[in-house]
Amino acid sequence: MASVPSDKVRMPTPVKLLIAGGFGVGKTTMVGAVSEIKPLRTEEVLTDRSVGVDDLSGVERKTTTTVAMDFGRISVGDDYVLYLFGTPGQERFWFVWDELARGALGAVVLADTRRLSDCFPSVDYFERRGTPFVVAVNCFEGAPVYDLAEVKMALSLPADIPVLLCDARRRASGKEVLITLVQHAYSRRPVAKV
Amino acid sequence: MNPDEQLYDEQVVRPYVISRGRTEARANLDLISLAVAIRQPTGLEVGLDPEHLAIVRLCRRPLSVAEIAAALDLPAGTVRVLLGDLLDSGFVAVQDPQPEVDVLDERMYRAVLDGLRAL
Image (cartoon, rainbow over all chains, first blue to last red; front, side):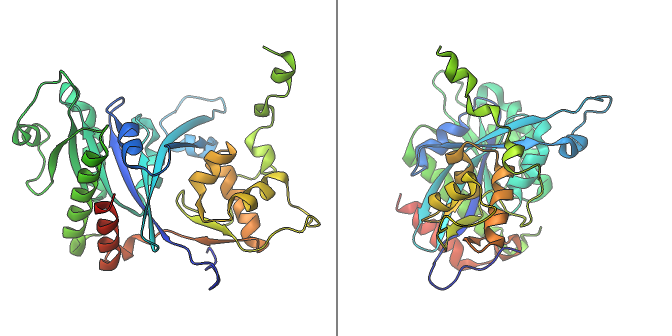
């Protein structure tokens, strides 16, 4: 496949982390809080063929749809560079999720206690795919405050999935969430299967 | 609004015109695959479009497919096709992400955790 760079160009290895969750839960906010660059936006265009796997049966016309994803970057030493991708909110863009999840080290599922069910599809997706994930409850002002055990129960999460509170606007908080995620991914490492 | 601006809106050129109708990149590049320029065009190369040259200029330091796409305001798929050309003609080198099977690499976890703690 791709060529290996010559000895003269030393390149870091890119590593991917995902930030998922329902619409308006603070994914891009969290990306922006921890990223060393202003969050950027990239677009994938659904061509006819990818539309075919989307459920558009009965739609005879050619259709193209653009899916936008926000992302940020964190350089970690000389050897690795982390990319954080906010997943597109709409579930009909599963094909983009599959591409994003491929090779991802892990995912943060952001939850809002006012609309907890919004994060169910993300939890289901990563559980099914076997991608390590943690659930971070974004503490919106005015949102009901629940005990983390209650959130865990409401999401019927296995006991070993970390659930934590966060403030997606704060760098220190986002950092804590990402550290928890990477530690969790590491602890699950021996059983990590594609 | 100035009517000229409307007339020459860059959106007039469709992404797949830039990639000459091709949607399949020869190299199966990930969104986070990194590209870096390893040879500068002399200006005499045949077959390089302005977008190719813009990518080579951008990649003086390693940049991901996603970053190149954002910087040039092109869909990621178009950038994959153009990068495939540049890879074939030896202008860029590409570093792919850590393969999924290799997430067993303990060194990587340690480096990532250290990097995050230093944030």
